[in-house]
Image (cartoon, rainbow, N blue to C red):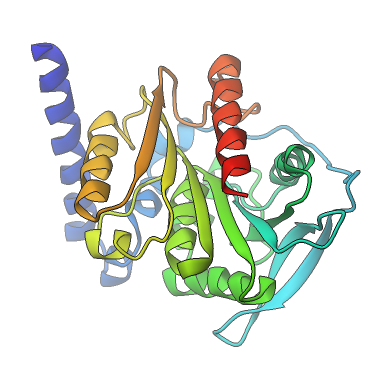
Length: 282
């Protein structure tokens, strides 16, 4: 127990030190980036992600790329699979740091097939850019503009309409985006799933949540460490919000089959929890 306590304290201090050192040595623009973006530029974080094998997804459910307007006056893209019957239920899917690649489209279709009557919308947060190397992914993730990311999410909410009930799910960078999305969805939010994504640390923003959160974390990773997850639970309690957390004895990106540290058992268990959660919300 003493050893575990020391480990958690060290992890927490290391994380805080990382954030402060990045901000103290970076430009003002860099300080506006979230913690996950700051991590993306480090070689250590990049090496933890194996480059995905080539894959082309052919949708069997009629999924297609669409465009929608964003509040900043631009357009954004998404891969949309419409429910067989008209439905106001939507699942927003948020990409890993690679971008909206065909693996995300495939996973979106898996969710669609299991949820049956839910529209599934995988949102392109990089405006058409997709990385195939660690270095490219690091540049895209670290270079993403927070205002643009928010505008894309707000545009997606506007696209589905005021009557839509929205849940969200995302991995890695997308795990944090899933939580941000739930906050921006307001009263339309019915659920939020974060796969090893960086939690929001501003309690005032967490108070804006209209739904609970399911957090699926990797207990062996150093970035979103057990200490970070524990603090998130405390912050959610302070905000008066509910969060259910499960941490697996696995590494970051354990649910990605293209990752060398893919954990099939943990991935299947996490997906089972995610589907049960979503079915309960819809």
